[in-house]
Image (cartoon, rainbow, N blue to C red):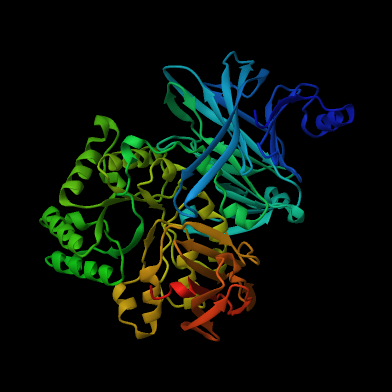
Length: 624
């Protein structure tokens, strides 16, 4: 059997150190290691009876002993009498994924522990460890209605770690950072939500806190700062969660990576998420990503909806977009369903699929088995729409996750795609429901620093709806930077923010429009280039088929020198279509075509808040 599962009996000096630092005394510490031996976790019970854990890599301890537990019906189940290992199994798999790369390789150890509590309720703890990190979840057997009052979760990071967190709602896209030792002193009291990204001190790598929830599950978590670099997690539903049957809390995951390249390509969340149901997605060639223009609705469209909507479909086809999204309010027009049916027929002839939007509040409640939702999706399917966009309110409700999960399932039954405009991270759901193409709504007016942080923060949790290519927006961020963001973000459904005619009618954007027409939205391979730094420089090379794309975004207000070698292509010679900044002119791009050698070192000057984009093709493949 691969891996290691053992009771570790530390020497006297080590035991004394544990007692002083954590309260873990002479009891057994059960150690679980990854098959490669590069990541470990230790599960233990403190001398006070508290379940706790520790995580580290071959080079360093990452999370020092921190508490775990759950409170059900007023009884704290984290206070234990005994911890016993039940079983360990190896898990290996190679399976398709979407977004950052096309295939994931899993080589992991999964363990189940049996926990006997002082409260008289016994339950299980699942643990999962692989080279990409560690995760756990709590399983409490039982029947009937029960209340989960609270969950105990904690993380104790090394002193000097830098923590990146969302300064507001995650779909707001604003990220900031602080040293973990400073969080407890921040006013009015630091708190954040998952995901959380940690730069470990002394260049020892990166960690990221995530959760993985089965679609429709409860258990979203809010983080608060404690003393000594500790962070605690509490359920967002502070009043508790009513449930019935087996309590299956989400996976709480710690992603671990030595480099930003490893972090972006980390598959821990994919390993933990339930796989797609083959009855729903077998032969799932209907699940395809692409680009979408917006079809806005409003009083000005009254009486001319068919003409206005068809014109937008024409624009979508001219831009090479696979989809057009009919925004909320379309169904308020007279004969709305007839108009939608005609639009879908017209769009189908143009090679464009139609998404239709509706507010979540109009989709009914669970009573009656979501009858309102089902009826709406039936009518969309009958009209010929290929997808649905659901707009949730900004005020998060515990019922949102349940409705989102049901939308994904019911849409899959009808072979329909989904865009969830929901302020919650995907939490693994796109692996279970590949028909979810994007989520959230990150605004296009972020600072350059936030743009340079997003690929290494929010997008680690899965796809997100960021709208690039808004070249008419004023500001100091250059057009090349905005073009680069279309490559740097990860979203199988890429949403265009600006009016398509503003792109199509601007002679200065002819080369950019050709680039957008050919831009993939899902990648076979992604490499983070040397020099990338969270919030300062995002630089990636991404491959689709036989074409490589290179993109860089300068997140600073100073000029940066960046370099890369195209040797990763494996080609001796290649043609590069390049977009570069024009010094002092944020609204212009310099487009050139040149031939590169695979051994060249390309040296670039990025303007303040500037960028760079290149499309690389093997020289003998150009024109074929």
